[in-house]
Image 1 (tube, helix red, strand yellow):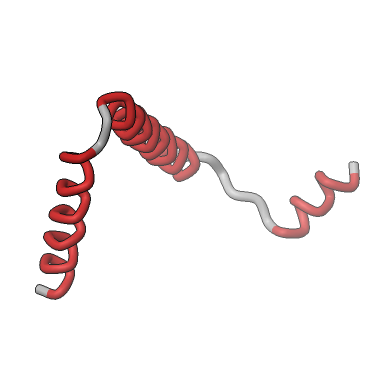
Image 2 (image 1 turned 60 degrees about the horizontal axis):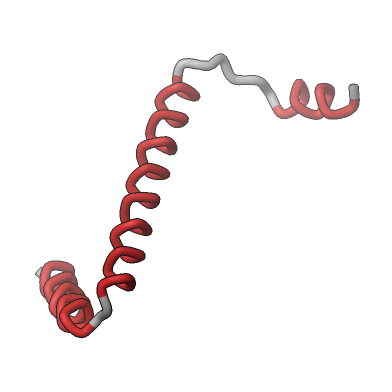
Amino acid sequence: METTTKRQELLKAINQRLEQAYEDTLEDVLELLDIWSSEDQEDIKAFEEAENEPTITWEQYKQELES
């Protein structure tokens, strides 16, 4: 419940500031949100791909670094 309340307070504060922001600032905010969303999707994809990759031991990793 506390998380929901904090989220609602944050959204309210953000909304109040967005209402006062210039149009170009709003465009910048939207662009940042799109970038973060895109990065999140890339991270999820990389994580899913990594799950299917065989793992190596620390010793194998160190040997790869040395060669």
